[in-house]
Amino acid sequence: MVLEEVNNEELNPETVNQESLSVQEEKTAECVEYNNCSPAELIVEMEKFCSMDLVEAHRKDIEDIRSLFYKKQKVEFDEARRNYVAENGSAEGFTFDSKEKEFKDVYGRIKELRARIAEQRQKELAANLQVKLQIIDKIEKLTESPESMNKTFAEFKNLQEEWKNSGNVAVSEEKTIWEKYHLQVAKFYDYVKIDRELRDLDQKKNYEAKIALCEKAENLSEVKQIVKAFADLQILHEEWRKIGPVKEEFKEQLWERFKTATTVINKAHQDYFTNIKLQEEENLKKKTALCEKMDSIIANLEMTQKQWNTVTNQVLEIQKEWKTIGYAPQKQNTLIYERFSKVCDVFFSARKTFFGEVHEVENGNKKQKVALCEKAEAMQNRTDWKEATLDFIQLQKEWKKIGSTGFKDSQKLWNRFTSACNAFFDAKKEFEAAQDKALNDNIEIKESLIQKVSEISSEVKEDALKALAAIQEEWAKVQVPASAKADLQKRFSESVNGLLQKLDVEKTDAEDLAFRIKISALLLEKGGEDKVMQEVKKIKNKLAAVQSEIKSLENNVGFFSKSSDASKLIASVEKNIEKGKSEINLLEKRLKVINSILRERK
Image (tube, rainbow, N blue to C red; front, side, top):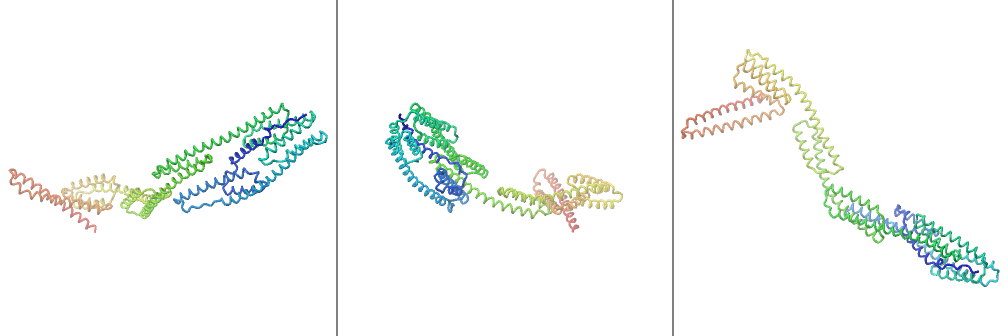
């Protein structure tokens, strides 16, 4: 009886090799474990694999680290350069502490280990090839063996087991060696007349093994990590090739079942990379949109300080959003990053220039405000309330004209300035409050003086006038609030006038007395002498005006004789002249009164 022929499709090494290449591509594309490491930490991680037993087992880790190292170093270089330019205005003099030499030293050791492993592997592949050729030769010689069939078949099974354990050969030799092996196995089954029971038992065993592989392949569709599922599938294919033939009736359906499960994993694997590519394209669109936003921002950098602050926050949000976006396609990733980095550098360089100028202006404003603070502090203890108040108001006006000093100093300087101003005005309020209290107390004194005037006896005129003069002098010394002054003065004047009428004092004498009281009162007020001198100025101006008017009237009298109504006009003019002379006498008399009072004060 002839055992089942081995399926050529099952033994095709090209299918497995192509799928293995896809695994390597996916391993290169995936980078999960080391994203949070710095370049220096990545070098440390790379060092861990510098041994013969780890360098090949962790090929994916090594290449992931290598890819990440150059990406992270590029990011750090760009960020350091951008910060340097932002602080110094240009890249001149910029240096960067690169870890590339240290990395290349470690990676060079790994390459040396790989070369040694590759050399060793070539030797192993060559040795495996010799072992397989010897196994093929032994299978060929089995057909010439005089031994019993059971012993021959047992030896054949041992040779098959040796073949399974003999290891891989070079890819260039793999197809040929499998064809030779398959040819000798087929010849052996054609030659050996083994009984059906033994053959059925072997085929049943092979059938069960392939069923198990089908189930394992089908279960791989439940594995979430498609990369691991794809790698496991390659192992199942390798095991499938090592299992012997099954009955012809099951051969095709088993292979179709296994192939269907393989197709599911292959499609998922292909979709995985397709999705990665689509995501990278989407990432490129998002990053391009952010670059365009930055382009529109740097197109108009003529802004106020408030606008600069607002737009800076927008740029920081754009940079924050950039960091959340993954890689773009490999060919465009570096280019799009350089484009974004360049527009950010332009913005922050312009911002630095603008705020440098603002800072210079603010420093000038600060010096002016410090000077005003010093002036206010030097003035805060003054007690010349009126003049000092005017000086403080002037300082406040000057403060308002000065621009900003920046957030850092603005409130501090304002607190210093207002503290000095408030110290003065609080002291002034306390003084005025005390003054107001004293003035309010004086209202009763004034009331009593009014009462005293009304109580003066009018029997002896001279005594009455002396008493009145004493009261008037005391009245002038007593100050009251402005709100009560007019009413009290009116009542006092009415009381005085009433007394003078009783005493039958002439009107002119009464007016002189009232004027004397007025001047004396002014002199007792704050700034009284200045007020009296203003009164003197008003009298002199009035005197000059009246004298000028009289002179003009006297000069024009001669012209009136030619008029038919000359006598009437002359009489009117002369009347005005006399009236003016009387007014001159009154004004000159008041000047004498003022001079007399001023002399008495000295």
